[in-house]
Image 1: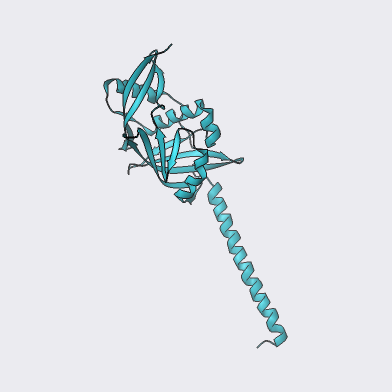
Image 2 (image 1 turned 90 degrees about the horizontal axis):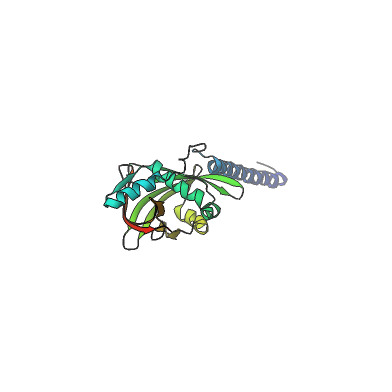
Length: 219
């Protein structure tokens, strides 16, 4: 049994030890979270080069009204060409390129290094694509979001990215919407080609799309 004058010191020591232990645990957790946030498992991943090959396939299929299948690489190449051509997309979103990986369950992982406040974060979003024919909108349900190795609640991630979305995208809850009425336009065989999407789905790791074709002479 400690003398009375020592009991106060002993209690103070135990309290200090408890506080220091909590602080150490907190700092360790902070270090782990920081590592997970800035550690990008996809760093150095090769990005598909910007390409319009998907557009040619889509237009050719649209002439006959047939469904066209695109690989994830073709989709990513087409998206990267849009990013490179559109300064608004690059400045608002902070991304310069992305890659797409199709999954067996009908979802797709979209990976992009995103610049934010002088730092680059590797962001992976798992999406389920579909098409709303009544609204002429592509829909992408966001199933999960990872920044680096850190899983981020979808709602929180959507709140953070909402103000940075390109003008062609909008948010509805945990779903990204893309208005297609003025999106698919290209020059093809000397004509201005306007495509109206009528179908979008992901099946057997291929994107299946269908369009109606509208032509107008350039000039």
